[in-house]
Amino acid sequence: MPTREEWAIVLFTLRVAALGMAIILPLGVAAAALLARRRGAGRTVLDTLFSLPLVLPPTAVGVVLLDALSRASPLGRWLAAAGIQIAFDWKGVVLATAVMSFPLLVRSALTAFEEVDPRLVGLARTLGCGPLQAFFRVTLPLAWRGVLAGTVLAFARALGEFGATVMLAGNIPGRTQTLALAIFHETQLGHDGRARVLAGVTALLAFVALWSSEAVGRARTRRAA
Image (cartoon, rainbow, N blue to C red):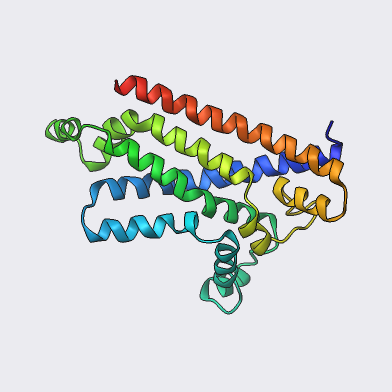
């Protein structure tokens, strides 16, 4: 059974993953809606840009984020002036998990939006709905299962994030250490038993998240049929 310290790591991981999802949910939905409406080279460029964290090494993403937040960058200087610390802090963990999970949410939501019959949206527009009203009253209610499935899948990805997190937030016990970082840390110290317990908890959480995503996806498929 996990110790109190290990449960604290589990809870911290769940909290930062949930916060990351809360950040990327509106952004991911907006990005997917934008892609669904665009055609041509502009969409290809945006789709590629949003998908980059899927193909780049997570450590490379972490380096990019670290550079963007350094005092040499305008954003880093603004954050320093505002007294906001992100690098090597729990907020850095949230940012890293959010960035690495973002593409999964966007791709799932995009597929769901593209499955919505455009004639329904057009009908809503002829009845007096503006673009935003039609989106929230027609498109989003019809695509919510895909958005939810993408959110759960992104959450599962956030639970196991390692490379970008260790580069941006470090591996500071009690401050930035997530399950993935704790497993690595315990293995390095030769505490294989503790590493196995943490790995088991991680696998269980990921299984529940993935099963939930698949269940939502199957329900969406049956509804479409």
